[in-house]
Amino acid sequence: MGNYTFQWRQAFRAFPEMLEGALVTLQISILSMLIGVTIAVLLAVGRDAKSRWLRAPATAWVEVARNTPALFQIYMAHFGLGSFGIYLSPYAALLAGIAFNNAGYLCETFRGAMRAIPGTQLRAGRSLGMGQAKAFRLIILPQMFRISFLPTTNQMIWAILMTSLGVTVGLNSDLAGVTQDLNARSFRTFEFFALAAVIYYVIAKAVMLGARLLAARLFRY
Amino acid sequence: MIEIENVHKSFGALQVLKGIDLTVQRGEVVSVIGGSGSGKSTLLTCINGLEPIDKGRIVVDGTEVHARDTDLNKLRRKIGIVFQQFNAFPHLTVLENVTLAPRKVKGMGRKDAEEIAVQQLSHVGLADKLNVYPSRLSGGQQQRMAIARALAMSPDYILFDEVTSALDPQLVGEVLDTLKLLADEGMTMICVTHEMSFARDVSDRVAFFHKGVMAEIGAPDQIFGDPQQEETRQFLSSVR
Image (tube, rainbow over all chains, first blue to last red):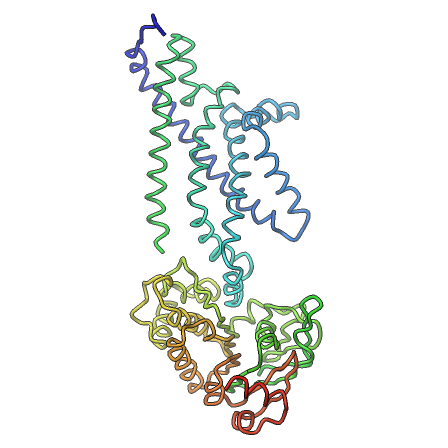
């Protein structure tokens, strides 16, 4: 590292541009979580369903999402689907890939949480005249979210960091994409990526803090 | 009126109910006693359709519980059940536990539901715990809340499934007092219980279950004072 001269000023000058990228990163990760959580709930119900026609696709989703590289999932969304005439923009492909991945992991997290809720809770709801779906929504779901809250925040952080894979499908508006462009123009690799890493760290920390505040409001029991 | 006719029920190879016949009139309090595994609790969950039956039929106010076209969600509004393990909803306050079903099942407005809930919770002595979460309640308080929750649906019948069995001995009294209060008010109740003095004092009739069969049924004085069956005598001497 002897004769490398750090040029931090150039990196700091690009800071506002990187922050804009950070907003895109945050947006993709939050959207991917919202979609992921929704699908994961459906998958968790499907995996334990009586009908094979619900169980099989849910299981297949979880198997593929968890046991193949996230990079491939994003590649498939962008380049792979193209073979079938479905063209997703880099942004949409990244979002789809991460949401797919989130759903697979969160499904298992949620399933574990549901196992922790005594079956008698559902029976109690049913015996008050609630249908299966209503009892699930009003009684099981809120308890499930509380039990699985910490592992879910884990996945949230993972989602934030996974967005950096967007560069591989040509996304240049998120933090990794912006950083990559700046790097290509200046070859100040260390400075730009170090700064970007700090920003990723701060985003992840801030999201965790937000999640904790949300939990304190939602789970008061 | 609840009419139970020749009800059979098995879990796998295990025959739990072997032809139960029992009719409970409006306003009647029937206690069901018997050893564990005698099928008492199963009968209750069959009455409100939580469990299917293999043979026979159960008719509540003219509606056959296990008929294919019966709307169980609707039927269950008039048959309350209170379980051994309280089953408080831990994520809801006491008040929310009680208003949930009136609001979400009956479609009542929040205000009306809360009015009923406060009334029922006062009834069971929990008026000062409205905004507390169940985890802060004792077992006896949780069970009384569960009773208020069932009452808030204004059911015509309430089934009690060993509601004091999971309680510390010193908390049993407060729950039994609540049941007595309901019985005095004319609520129709079927109580599966191990509390013999309760069965004796409060019931109009006492049924003794033995190995899936109703071995004997009669007035409390007769069952406890002059049991006709050998099994009843043996059971009673074992719990005394």
